[in-house]
Length: 281
Image 1 (tube, one colour):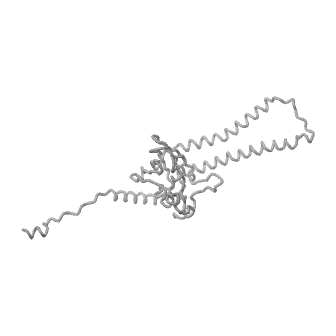
Image 2 (cartoon, one colour):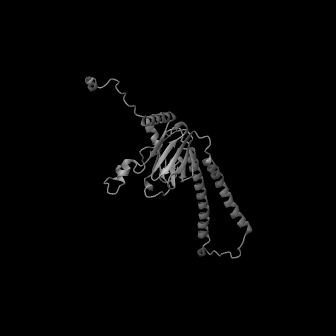
Image 3 (cartoon, one colour):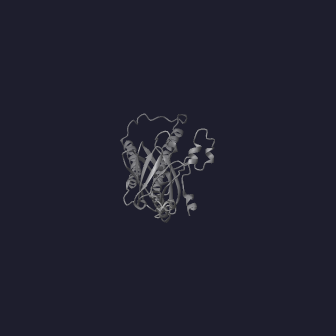
């Protein structure tokens, strides 16, 4: 199931916005395409009229410019109303999408995300309470990026886009991220989620997404704010699992954490005196 799910990861074709795997990303893609085709229509009309006028009313065909038309109230009203209507057509769905992006109510899983130079800390709440870890650039990428490492970056899978511990979330669940930073401004960004928000020191930003069921897999992003020397080595990786697999993962993480902090119980002392002591008596 996990291998099949990875087919859906990273939905961009490199020439357009990714359609993504969340309601928000699909709505963003739809709005983007709507505005794009409106712009294409405007360009066709404007350039069509301009090219027609240049070819039809050129001097070589005996065209004489009309010097009497210097003002037309009707024309000015028309070319004011039409752009206003076009802007309204684009603004209404855009405003609706912005309001939807900011609506973090009824979230089912909250995760605090803290940015550091140059790593992420994930602290789970709600169903994942107690799970807390750092996510940093994977060692093979870290070694390959070093000057004179002798390692061909092309030989490293997902070079600079892989981490040692990815963020794990369940599909079909509204996930809310609480973003902040401990040093400089960072930005948590995963294109296929339609999710990007700044992590600012001393301030908490909110971000939410809900991955469609059946779209389990690995999704990659990066820090999208210039956060210092190693800004380019701060990837974001999200492992989307089924709700059942997520519950198992949470249980495993909690068990491992309990074992790590469990005190070592000393072996009980032998009640009988040492053999040497018995011999002396």
